[in-house]
Length: 188
Image (tube, rainbow, N blue to C red; front, top):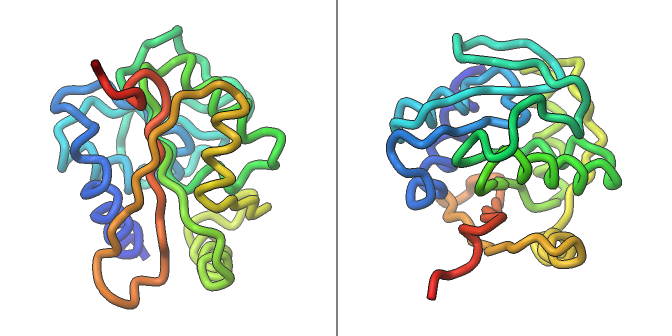
Protein backbone atom coordinates (compact mmCIF):
# COMPACT_ATOMS: atom_id res chain seq x y z
CA UNK A 1 0.00 0.00 0.00
CA UNK A 2 3.01 2.28 -0.23
CA UNK A 3 1.65 3.54 -3.56
CA UNK A 4 -1.10 5.50 -1.77
CA UNK A 5 1.56 7.27 0.29
CA UNK A 6 3.67 7.99 -2.78
CA UNK A 7 0.65 9.54 -4.52
CA UNK A 8 -0.04 11.60 -1.39
CA UNK A 9 3.63 12.64 -1.41
CA UNK A 10 3.37 13.98 -4.96
CA UNK A 11 0.39 16.17 -4.00
CA UNK A 12 2.24 17.39 -0.91
CA UNK A 13 5.52 18.07 -2.72
CA UNK A 14 3.81 20.19 -5.36
CA UNK A 15 2.12 22.23 -2.60
CA UNK A 16 5.18 22.79 -0.39
CA UNK A 17 7.94 23.09 -3.03
CA UNK A 18 7.89 26.94 -2.97
CA UNK A 19 8.35 26.91 0.82
CA UNK A 20 11.19 24.37 1.19
CA UNK A 21 14.64 25.65 0.23
CA UNK A 22 17.18 23.02 -0.83
CA UNK A 23 19.24 21.95 2.18
CA UNK A 24 16.66 23.11 4.74
CA UNK A 25 16.57 21.27 8.07
CA UNK A 26 13.06 19.77 8.08
CA UNK A 27 11.31 18.05 10.98
CA UNK A 28 8.48 15.73 9.90
CA UNK A 29 6.18 15.86 12.92
CA UNK A 30 3.90 12.82 13.07
CA UNK A 31 6.01 11.15 10.38
CA UNK A 32 4.26 7.79 10.63
CA UNK A 33 6.12 5.17 8.61
CA UNK A 34 8.30 7.94 7.04
CA UNK A 35 7.38 7.18 3.42
CA UNK A 36 5.94 10.66 2.81
CA UNK A 37 8.79 12.50 4.54
CA UNK A 38 11.43 10.46 2.73
CA UNK A 39 9.79 11.21 -0.63
CA UNK A 40 9.85 14.93 0.31
CA UNK A 41 13.54 14.64 1.23
CA UNK A 42 14.43 13.02 -2.08
CA UNK A 43 12.38 15.45 -4.19
CA UNK A 44 13.31 18.70 -2.43
CA UNK A 45 16.83 18.02 -1.17
CA UNK A 46 16.18 18.81 2.48
CA UNK A 47 17.76 17.36 5.63
CA UNK A 48 14.97 15.25 7.15
CA UNK A 49 14.38 14.15 10.73
CA UNK A 50 11.19 12.35 11.71
CA UNK A 51 9.32 12.25 14.99
CA UNK A 52 6.11 10.56 16.07
CA UNK A 53 4.36 9.22 19.17
CA UNK A 54 4.64 5.71 17.66
CA UNK A 55 7.64 4.10 16.00
CA UNK A 56 6.76 2.09 12.89
CA UNK A 57 9.21 3.32 10.27
CA UNK A 58 9.41 1.58 6.92
CA UNK A 59 12.10 4.00 5.67
CA UNK A 60 15.51 4.55 7.22
CA UNK A 61 15.52 8.18 8.38
CA UNK A 62 16.88 9.93 11.48
CA UNK A 63 14.05 9.53 14.02
CA UNK A 64 13.21 10.54 17.58
CA UNK A 65 10.25 9.06 19.45
CA UNK A 66 8.03 11.75 20.98
CA UNK A 67 7.51 11.55 24.72
CA UNK A 68 3.98 12.96 24.28
CA UNK A 69 1.85 14.48 21.49
CA UNK A 70 2.60 17.96 22.82
CA UNK A 71 6.34 17.66 23.54
CA UNK A 72 9.12 17.71 20.97
CA UNK A 73 12.50 16.88 22.48
CA UNK A 74 14.49 19.34 20.36
CA UNK A 75 16.05 22.75 21.00
CA UNK A 76 14.28 26.02 20.27
CA UNK A 77 14.45 26.88 16.53
CA UNK A 78 16.53 23.76 15.83
CA UNK A 79 14.80 23.27 12.46
CA UNK A 80 14.17 25.61 9.55
CA UNK A 81 10.84 23.95 8.82
CA UNK A 82 8.34 21.71 10.51
CA UNK A 83 6.03 19.59 8.39
CA UNK A 84 2.77 18.23 9.79
CA UNK A 85 0.99 16.07 7.22
CA UNK A 86 -2.50 14.77 8.03
CA UNK A 87 -1.55 14.40 11.69
CA UNK A 88 -3.44 17.03 13.69
CA UNK A 89 -6.83 15.53 12.86
CA UNK A 90 -5.66 12.45 14.80
CA UNK A 91 -5.36 14.53 18.00
CA UNK A 92 -8.06 15.61 20.41
CA UNK A 93 -9.23 19.18 19.69
CA UNK A 94 -7.62 20.58 22.86
CA UNK A 95 -4.29 18.90 22.01
CA UNK A 96 -4.09 20.30 18.46
CA UNK A 97 -3.10 23.85 19.36
CA UNK A 98 -0.63 22.69 22.03
CA UNK A 99 1.11 20.45 19.47
CA UNK A 100 1.21 23.24 16.90
CA UNK A 101 2.64 25.74 19.40
CA UNK A 102 5.31 23.21 20.37
CA UNK A 103 6.11 22.72 16.67
CA UNK A 104 6.59 26.47 16.31
CA UNK A 105 8.98 26.42 19.27
CA UNK A 106 11.39 24.00 17.55
CA UNK A 107 10.79 25.09 13.92
CA UNK A 108 11.12 28.59 12.49
CA UNK A 109 8.21 27.91 10.12
CA UNK A 110 5.62 25.13 10.23
CA UNK A 111 3.79 23.81 7.18
CA UNK A 112 0.50 22.12 8.07
CA UNK A 113 -1.00 19.97 5.32
CA UNK A 114 -4.53 18.89 6.20
CA UNK A 115 -7.54 17.32 4.53
CA UNK A 116 -11.01 18.86 4.30
CA UNK A 117 -13.55 17.17 6.59
CA UNK A 118 -15.73 15.39 4.02
CA UNK A 119 -17.56 12.13 4.70
CA UNK A 120 -15.54 10.32 2.02
CA UNK A 121 -12.22 11.68 3.32
CA UNK A 122 -13.02 10.44 6.82
CA UNK A 123 -13.97 6.96 5.58
CA UNK A 124 -10.81 6.70 3.48
CA UNK A 125 -8.73 8.00 6.39
CA UNK A 126 -10.05 5.24 8.63
CA UNK A 127 -9.44 2.52 6.04
CA UNK A 128 -6.00 3.66 4.91
CA UNK A 129 -4.75 4.24 8.44
CA UNK A 130 -5.88 0.78 9.56
CA UNK A 131 -3.74 -0.62 6.73
CA UNK A 132 -0.68 1.53 7.50
CA UNK A 133 -0.88 1.26 11.32
CA UNK A 134 -3.82 -0.26 13.18
CA UNK A 135 -2.59 1.28 16.47
CA UNK A 136 -2.95 4.87 15.22
CA UNK A 137 -5.35 7.17 17.06
CA UNK A 138 -8.31 7.77 14.73
CA UNK A 139 -10.31 10.41 16.60
CA UNK A 140 -10.87 12.31 13.29
CA UNK A 141 -10.97 15.85 14.67
CA UNK A 142 -10.96 17.53 11.28
CA UNK A 143 -11.67 21.24 10.80
CA UNK A 144 -12.50 23.17 7.67
CA UNK A 145 -9.97 25.77 6.51
CA UNK A 146 -11.79 28.71 8.12
CA UNK A 147 -11.95 26.88 11.46
CA UNK A 148 -8.18 26.25 11.28
CA UNK A 149 -7.52 29.89 10.42
CA UNK A 150 -9.71 31.05 13.31
CA UNK A 151 -7.89 28.72 15.73
CA UNK A 152 -4.53 30.12 14.65
CA UNK A 153 -5.83 33.71 14.88
CA UNK A 154 -7.22 33.13 18.40
CA UNK A 155 -3.78 31.97 19.53
CA UNK A 156 -1.82 34.75 17.83
CA UNK A 157 -0.15 32.44 15.32
CA UNK A 158 0.70 34.14 12.02
CA UNK A 159 -0.91 32.07 9.28
CA UNK A 160 -1.20 32.06 5.52
CA UNK A 161 -3.65 29.68 3.84
CA UNK A 162 -3.08 28.11 0.43
CA UNK A 163 -5.57 25.76 -1.22
CA UNK A 164 -3.94 22.67 -2.71
CA UNK A 165 -4.54 21.68 -6.31
CA UNK A 166 -5.94 18.17 -6.87
CA UNK A 167 -3.62 15.97 -8.93
CA UNK A 168 -6.44 14.74 -11.20
CA UNK A 169 -10.24 15.01 -11.50
CA UNK A 170 -11.94 12.68 -9.07
CA UNK A 171 -9.08 12.69 -6.54
CA UNK A 172 -10.98 11.93 -3.32
CA UNK A 173 -9.30 14.49 -1.04
CA UNK A 174 -9.39 18.27 -0.85
CA UNK A 175 -6.37 19.58 0.99
CA UNK A 176 -5.20 22.78 2.63
CA UNK A 177 -1.75 24.10 3.28
CA UNK A 178 -1.15 26.48 6.17
CA UNK A 179 2.15 28.32 6.50
CA UNK A 180 2.62 29.19 10.18
CA UNK A 181 5.13 31.45 11.87
CA UNK A 182 7.27 34.28 10.54
CA UNK A 183 7.16 33.00 6.92
CA UNK A 184 3.37 33.47 6.96
CA UNK A 185 3.78 37.24 7.08
CA UNK A 186 4.63 38.91 3.77
CA UNK A 187 7.96 40.76 3.86
CA UNK A 188 7.80 44.56 3.43
